[in-house]
Length: 238
Image (cartoon, rainbow, N blue to C red; front, side):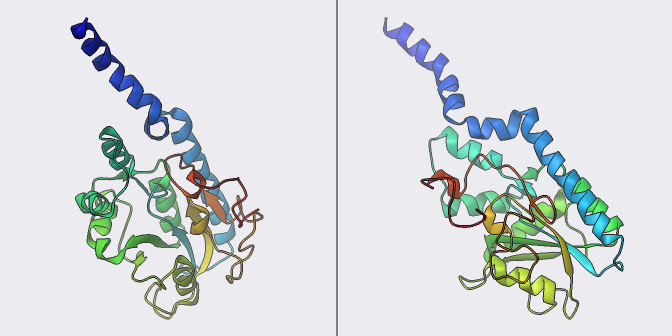
């Protein structure tokens, strides 16, 4: 009886893990996720390039978040889940410095189209600034980052994504092409904070109106504010 119970437990363990981590399996294995991501990037490409056709080369840009927008960190989530462990800064730093994250489906083609059309590219992420080397290595290794692209990590509590978005647009500050203003034609992200908030000097900032026009959101079933939010309406982008 004891041997039978152990054998059954060993058989069920992968099934239990799979059922309790379906969010990771969905992102890694489903055709639906990959198709949705490619669809978002195709729509963003069409929109950005349509607007760019009326602008000089080098005068416009696109802004992308990194995690689950540009780089796919599902292996990190898979590793943590296998041992029933939650996110922690030390293991996250080790993962980033391995520079082994994959590409989100569709992102490489989007970036290639933007460069070909004469657009600039800025990666704005809330990864801590001390993870710059690992982040850059991963992006370069995956053929996502090229000379002239901006990579703007978070240097302090005050260095919000809003501050860095403004820097890109105005040409002032460390997250800019020094002295060169950029008309941002597309924002790509997987969390609402990746997009201009109310009060920022971008069309439609803080509203739902720009989604599908200049704001393009990727699905992320693994983590985010929705995990602990009591209702769908969280206070922004109602």
